[in-house]
Structure formats: structure tokens, C-alpha cells
Image 1 (cartoon, helix red, strand yellow):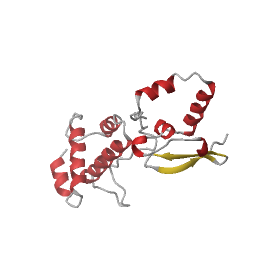
Image 2 (cartoon, helix red, strand yellow; image 1 turned 45 degrees about the vertical axis):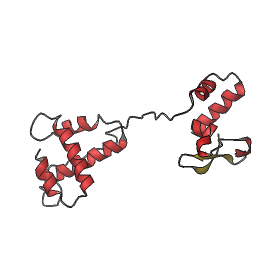
Image 3 (cartoon, helix red, strand yellow; image 1 turned 180 degrees about the horizontal axis):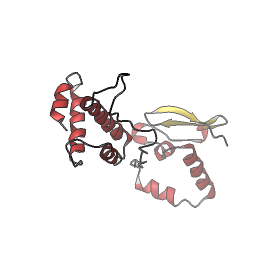
Image 4 (cartoon, helix red, strand yellow; image 1 turned 90 degrees about the vertical axis):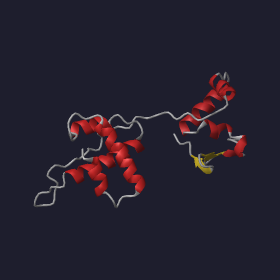
Length: 171
């Protein structure tokens, strides 16, 4: 793939970008059959990434390498051998991010018997409220949602990054 030549030609890129591109391209090089990857090999390799950030970083590395490797254009300035990815080609695989919550609290939430509690939890889940936003975090001085936070305009809550937002509960 001539990765070292590519990296040497990319002197204008920041050190960490070149390092990231090198990691991505060497990773791709381990998965291909020939000297240079085919479009199908690139798509197959990129399709294996779960995180959208990792996918975008690897796409950037491959596209930059491809433009360096195949710089030829026609008389209109259009690349002769373009590498284009369609909009829905890579569907991000949603990962559930587990946030640390006291196991006792999780047990209580999972086994609540009161229908009002279950309804409340269902509403908060519908609003996109995290458990930490619901119960608070005493270590950070966050109180969670109280009755005073529930208003006609919506539910006021402290969210990730300790920012306050009001979530409307419209049907």
C-alpha cells in the first residue's frame, strides 16, 4: 500500500493525525489480499467498526490515502478512480453505554411493585432520562428529580455535563 511513502508525503498533517492514519492504514493492510485494497475490501473493513467516531476516523484515513494513491483526474478535474461512499452504506451499530449506578438502586428499580413507580419510570425512559439524572449523584451534589422539578412546561433536570435542561412531555 506504500504507507510509508504516503505518510512521508503528508508532512502538513498534524503529528497525531499522521499517527492515526498510520494505525488505520496498517490495520487495513493486514486484511487485504493484494498490494492495494479494492473498494470491496475497504467497505468490508470499514463495516466492521461499531463506533461512529472510529468509523469516521478510518474513512478519513482511507479517503486521504486513496486520493494520494490515485491522483489522476480527467479534463474536467474529476478523479478517474474515485472512492465514494454512499450515505447509508455504513449503518452505525448502536452500543449501550453502561453507567455505574449502585446495584441496590438498580435492584429496587427493576423490582418496583407500585404501578405509579412503574409509570413514572416509563415516562422518564420515554423522555430519555438517565438513571443518574433520575436519582441524582450525592458525590457531585446532584439531587436528582424532585416534585419541584415537575412543571407544566416540562421536567427540569440536571443532565450529563451538569447542565440544566427542561424536557417537555408532549404526546
